[in-house]
Image 1 (cartoon, rainbow, N blue to C red):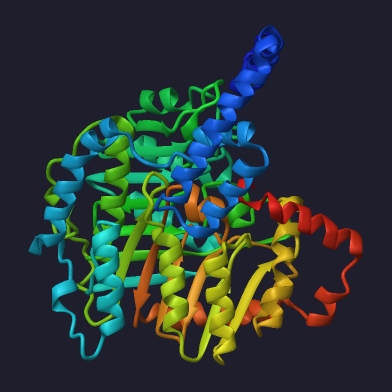
Image 2 (image 1 turned 180 degrees about the horizontal axis):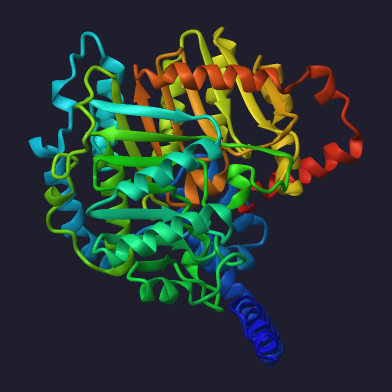
Length: 517
C-alpha cells in the first residue's frame, strides 16, 4: 500500500497533475474574459510585435532568431508566451551579481602561474591554432589552455568505467561529479559504494545531477539520501510542477574530477546502457577521455562554477584546487600537445560549443570526421559543414542507425540530402546507437564532450567539451573513428532522393519545429 501511494504521489504524477490544472485554469480564464477577448488579443498582438522587434535586434544566432520570428509572426499571442517562457536566456541581474565574484576569481586563477594556463607560452609561429582556440576559450569560456597533460582516450563506455572506479578508489582529498543522467544499476552502484566509503573517510565528495535527466531514474529526494551518506549533493534546476522559464535549460555536462589532478569527460552518463551492460538500442557506441595533469583544472573550474551557481555560494579562491596541490604519483607529463576544457551556458548569447565546431571546420585542410547522436543544425553550422566539403575537404559524418527517439531521428535524416549533395559522406552506425560527440580534424585537432549537433545542446543546455591539439591520443581517436565508419552503412544520394514521399513530408513538417525538439 505504501509503495502504491508513493507512486501516486510521485514527482512525475504531481507535475502532470499541476500542468493539467494550469491548462484548465487557462481555459477557465479564457471563457471568463471571453467578452473582452478581442481587446486582449489586440493588446497581446501588439506585445508580440514588440517582442519580435526585440528578438530581431537581439544578439542571438540568426537561425535561432529567424525560428522565433516565424513563430511570433504566425501565432503572435502563443509565440509571445512561448518566447517569454522558453527563450529568455540571459542571467538576471541578481544572478549576474551573485556569480560575478566567482567569475572574477576564475579569471584571476587563469592568469595565475599556479593554474598553469599555457596561453602566453605558446609559440605562435608553430602552434598558432592552439593559440587561437586557447584565446577564444580563455575569453568566452573562462577556461585556459594547458600543456603537460596526458590524455587517455576510451572508445567505449565500459573501458572508461573500469578506470573511473580505479581513480575513485585512489581519491584522498576530494571527488567532484556532475552528470545529466544517473541510474541505479551495475555502473552507478559500483561507484556509489566507493563514494559512500570515501565520504565516511573524510573525502570531500560532491555530486550534481540534472533533475529532469534523472526524472525517471531517481526518486525526488535522492539528494537527501546522498547527504545521509556524507555526499554533498544537489539536483540542478529542480523540476517544479509549474511552467518555468528555466525548465528548458538542463545541465547536460559529464564531469568527474579526483583530487584536482585526474579528470574525466565525454559522452557517457552513469547508467548501464552506457557500458553495454544492458541493451536498449543495439550496441551503444560512446566514448570518454581522461585528463591527468595541468589540464584537469579546466574541468575542476567548470564544476566549481556550476556548484557556485546551484548552491548560491561564492568561490573566492580557486588556488586550493590547482592540479599541483595534490600531485598524483605519476611522473609529470611533457610534450603531449595542448588541451583546453571548455563549457557553454544557455544564459548567455555566446554559443561556445557551436563555435568550437565551426572553427574546427574552418581549420580543416584534408579531412574532418564527426560523430553525433542527433543532427538538428542551424543554418550557419549546416553551411559550415557544406562549405568544408565543397572546398575539397573529406567530411565524414556518423549518426545512429537504431534511434532512441524516432521523431528526432526523422529530423536527422531530413538534413541528409543537402549535406550529401554538398559532398559530405554520411554513415549510419548499423550495430546500434552512437552517442559519442566527437570532431577530428586532419589528425591534429579534436574535441570530445557532451555537445550534440542539435539546438538543445547548441543553445539551451549547459554543456562541456575538451579541445585537443597535437595530443598523442588523437591517433587513438582517429583509429576508433575509422573502425566505426567501417562498421557503418553509407547514405547515398540515390537513397535520400528516392525515400518514400510520406517520410519526406513528415521530415519537412518536423524540421519546421526542430528548434523545440
